[in-house]
Length: 431
Image (cartoon, rainbow, N blue to C red; front, side, top):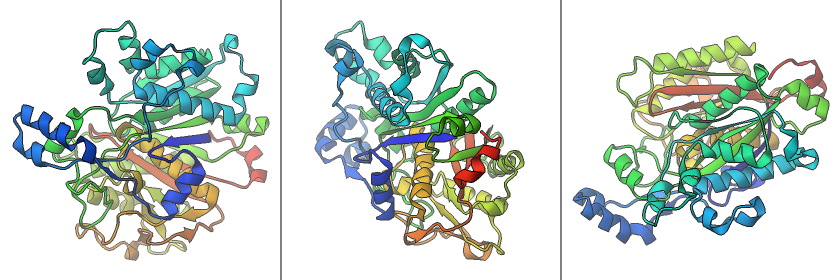
């Protein structure tokens, strides 16, 4: 049950700003003009003329170096060795917990049974610190385990603290783990999400060489001109509690997660291409566990990276389970990657935060960077589906959405999320 959200990507720091970016179908893309000479020189050192001539793009957090280390009791030397991912997580977790009211009664010595699950794949800042003399703080500042360990230590939490890496689906898998921990009684509350900071050139070259990255820099989900994804920095967190506990506490509830599931591609055609069989099985399991029907869902936040291989597979998997020509309201499909690019390990939580903002403002935004449907995808209208072209009201009795995220290594994760009128909450027994 998501309780409060924060998202950092470029200048998006609140649900209001996120709603504005989505409503305007705005792209936060930036060309790496200032870094072009450095990237080119690096590529030449690596003896790769093609990479030396290529232009790179990204979606970046504003002033990522800015960090109030003294506020968190961290000295200057330690802060210099602290991965920007850990800095963002400290800041976002504090904002989320402060807004929720948790910090007003929190005492670190109480050792609250709160859990922390973070999706994180990248360790780029280690390359930055390697350019300087060794520090006593480098290990704790860059090893991924400390993304969770530092948060739990700062707040004095005693619940599980785990970093999960399933590549692009990491943050949604972290939320899956959080939901399971709450259900199993391992914790009473959890903070979960993901983070990504792009601080070196190496992964730009590696992903570009592998054909993942767009030559034009834009993520174009489900578009005929889709040519790969654009990398993005960002972090997103949600605070989760049992619905009954949140209702009893009078919490401000943004959404309810009735079911969440994960599986593996297994028999996919290649290592990095999603399996349609696995995706369809994943969606079926969501409805079996939740009691909801596919017809209840009127929006799908797709993984939608804008690749010629992945987009058609994902769309046909959605069509197979949720497509229905008799739908009273069309099933809208979109992807936040058209706005902010691909946050890689933080991509799943970014999609969830988009849905929560949509629910809060009761609107379905136009899909950014979409002009013409990919010809490899059959027409959507005959199956009651659409890619929204302009902002429209989300006026249905129950706003319900499916959020999808799949990892390059084959690990898929998806969840259902909905809002209900307040008077119905006390009778529910859902997570």
